[in-house]
Image (cartoon, rainbow, N blue to C red; front, side, top):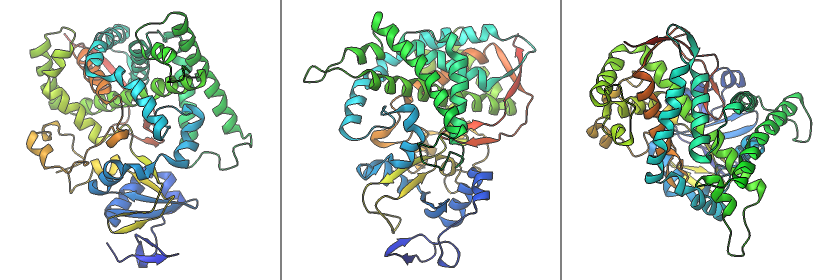
Length: 448
């Protein structure tokens, strides 16, 4: 990397001629993924750029990422940009909250994702997957991403909340689409929050619709408490005997409902998309499923004995991480890769670029599940692969998501082959998650 230059007594990673990296707004908005890749390729461990006056430090090395997310995680918070993006939707839920309050909420919600409890959810995952399979018809063309969004939403609501949201699927899907459209790139309204622009009005209507679904779930659990996350939140009390407010329960349910289904649905979409274009990989996966399952629904024990399925999902999430980047804000001054990070700086930490780094992965753009050997994983830097983030803020539902992805794939792929009929490349929208811009259309072929 070139020598740094001092600007206002702050040392910044330079671009050409010692100037900061400043890509054009057109380049950033047109293809944010390509822009991030260029920054990593041309400027190494740390890149600095500005978008509409907002400065970003893009951390590209596993060592720098580990410093931010693990070793010095106390210095890095979600920050103003993250709160502005997700605060109106998720409130002060687990994904957004900080400090002691976050630790309290994590302690409350954590038991729902312990291994014994996750194993209990497998039956629900299979049941819902079989219902989806029963709706498919031989020869039909379906938007697989839409189907996976619906399926994972139903699994999360049933497993974690003990409710059926079948009648609400369309409302949640359309409302979430509005939320994600609002977040795309830097297209969110730049005017003050109290200025009622058309985009903000649509966003608020979508949030109101989502809240109606969430409050119905909360009210149903209040009337009929059970052994589920919402019932526990309704029953919990602090040292003074005060329970969680209705608004806080709303924030936590909204977080689990939306974050808990969106990313897994995308992982399933990307995996089926890749399998449809790699018949050799699909054939090997089917041979493993046939040998171990013989057409029967998978159990938790079965899934543990399907190593190639595990590799397929891991490789899919390497190439297409559902969350392509993480944003953090520096609470205090720090140093990364020999450069000063000023207090208040926004950091962009990209799974997308690190997972595709040719210095870390041989032939990184190839879909090769076989690369995931024990030796290969041991040779990787610790945070060369982090689809669920890392450190204390690692996704609380990572094991739930992995089990769900494997159960759904094992259930559906035993019955159907999916033939891709839409574009063999993916145009992904740069929002909080990596969403396909267009439907991912596949023709359903029933296996004999």
